[in-house]
Amino acid sequence: MDINDEAKQIVEELGAAINSAVEKSSEVAVAIGRLRDVGYELELTLRLEIGLRHLGEQDEEANKDVTLELTDDDMRTLRRMKIRIDETETE
Image (cartoon, rainbow, N blue to C red; front, side, top):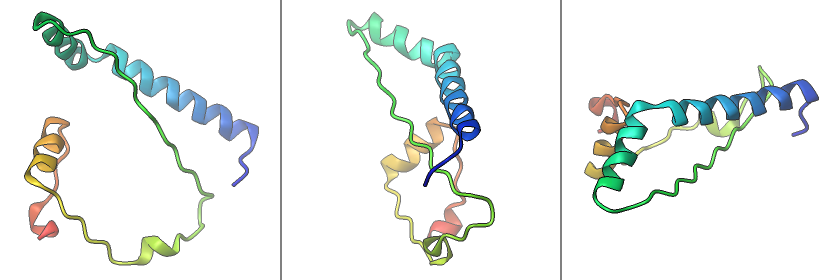
């Protein structure tokens, strides 16, 4: 999809804002410090993908039933990220 220059600029600003949030996160800084304390240097690369569609466009796939299967490790990771999932809906 072709997007206009204004949308491109906003997407770039969003990427910069996310990068800034990660850099300023005290939780990230603490974790990096703990890694250094045990003898490791961190090289972190995050990949951000942003998908856009015009308002009102219907995605045929969005209307299909989707099943999400999460492992215990997946659930622990989500909890560490403070993401909650109603487990009754995933069963």
